[in-house]
Length: 231
Image (cartoon, rainbow, N blue to C red):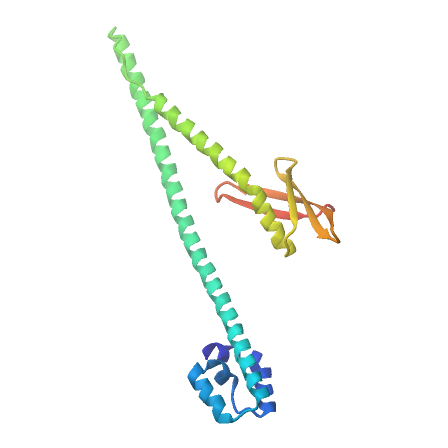
């Protein structure tokens, strides 16, 4: 198998054990042969029960090891693919934001031109004693859009606050590599007071920590950094 060839040094000990037992097989044959060919190969060697049990355990152990390596490789490839997709999405987002800024600048410029033209028309009509009504920009529609934007911002903030405790819990579990109780208390605009409680001998031992969070409004990412009390 190609995977065994790539990790030949790690299987050298297994090969030495095979040679010491007098089994005329290589590690590649033990783990790489199909079931039918493997059975024929083992039967042709006329091995003892101990050697057969050893080969069975060795074949299962190597296959499990290769399956774990392949799983990790697929996970890494999946993460790389997600990274590429994330970069592409960020590039599209940057283009969209750039286009949005350009459109906002264009709208502001057109609005200034409209106001200038309207002032000129109003002045011209007043000079002719004509008090006809001159149309103006519809502020009502703009205010409605701003209200919707503010409502969406409040909704996103509520979702953010609901998911923060779960995010902190997962982060703490990852740091300590075990499931523990984490309580999040807001004590300021830029600092979270994280009280970590580790279970030991049936009691909860509080270990106070401070977590500084830096919200990145452009990426929508919450950066959590665990700090000790003496820092």
